[in-house]
Image 1 (cartoon, rainbow, N blue to C red):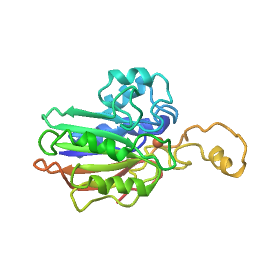
Image 2 (tube, helix red, strand yellow; image 1 turned 90 degrees about the vertical axis):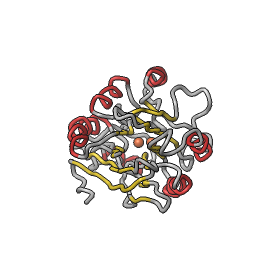
Image 3 (spheres, rainbow, N blue to C red; image 1 turned 180 degrees about the horizontal axis):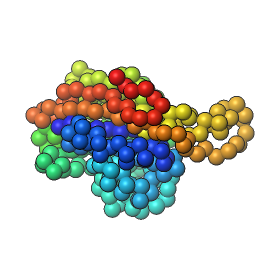
Image 4 (cartoon, helix red, strand yellow; image 1 turned 45 degrees about the vertical axis):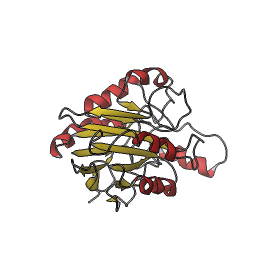
Amino acid sequence: MRLLFLGDVVGRVGRQAVIAKLPELRERYRLDFVVVNGENSAGGFGITEAICTDLIDAGADVVTLGNHAFDQKEALVFIERYPQLVRPINYPKGTPGRGASLIKTPAGMEVLVINAMGRIFMAELDDPFRAVDAEIAKYALGRSAHCILVDVHGEATSEKQSMGHHCDGRVTAVLGTHSHIPTADCWVLPGGTAYQTDVGMCGDYDSVIGMKKEAAVLRFIRKMPGDRLTPAEGEGTLCAALFETDDKTGLAKSVRPIRVGGRLPPAS
Ligand SMILES: [Fe+2]
Ligand SMILES: [Fe+2]
């Protein structure tokens, strides 16, 4: 199978990049499955039902979330109706929605997508390592799940890299989100798991992690409340990881970064 995983979509320009480019990428790379992180798709904070359906209509098979999952309160309700919408698995018991979803492709392949949130410099959720272990223990990679993708949503590179090694050989891919900056470590780990610490955002890079740079910079200079952070409005760059799996084992054969449009130079 060939899969594409797109990093955090930030605001309108991020959505426009995905909506404009994803259908063409699906064709060009003959994609079997697409996952998009949508935690910042509504004005930089959370996701609405209308935006979720826009991303699905553009070609997302699953939309993952993160610490901003419920910034738009309506997500607490509509998430229950969308098996394609996945929030971090290590939220406390009783949190609306699901932390993992098994979706069947038109070709009959079963793809498990797990969203797990780190705890370093982030909210103290349950242990993401144990939560991921418990979920992947329900499946046999290559048989009951032909592909298992873990979206590791975290701030600390060490914690995300640890999740990669912890899952190596047991899942198809561990791909990072949340920092909004693509890292230069996209490779297949020794055990056969595709890995990148952060795939980068889909948004305007002439910004501070997707938000207008003037207000964001002033926050660091003046230690007092300033303008509200709003998404930057220049052309968005679509950032993603493209990976191919071995249908027999469910492990990754290859992975590479994809960058399309906007100001950030192409990945290769
Ligand atoms: Fe984000
Ligand atoms: Fe985040």
